[in-house]
Length: 217
Image (tube, rainbow, N blue to C red; front, side, top):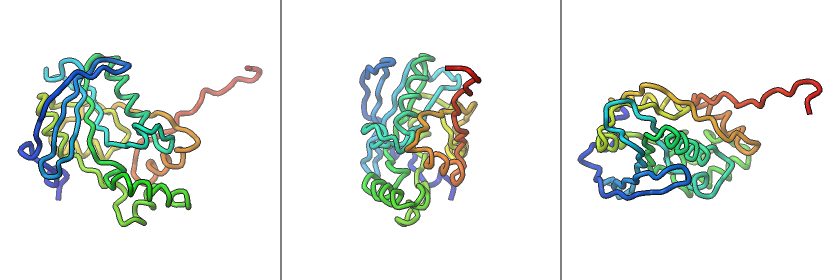
């Protein structure tokens, strides 16, 4: 079954309302959607005129409460969220879709169980599989009806994940450009990021510090 066939059509997603959302980087407009089948609430943060037909700088971000809210250094999610909003603010135009599919689709409690397995030696893929899940259970069918609300058809997509690009293409959403989003590689998440590259195909070329010349302080 194709990615687009698995997920909701526009008829299964309700657009609800919007409000101004001032952030440290810009004042966005926050739009709320509700998925009819599950009652899940999804968000779009919009800046500037994005329905003019030109490719839009965009981030499709799956919820990560531990990274986005609790500042966890075990992943790069919170830093990617912040980095994407900063990039959109710098350009003065863009959209961030916030999808409620925690833990690559396994949920918050199961993600904590997976973290416990990782502490016992499993990598992020093995931990999900040991809990009976696929390595990545996220789906992106909601993206198209959310973008259609704003008349957006083409993205400059901020992602390191080729599967996300393929999902957009399968949905009929053009990805005019991939914009890398490599942030916050640290001692706590290095193995996690390397595993995403090795086993999930993420384009995670390490950010290397500049070499120190001989005699430099």
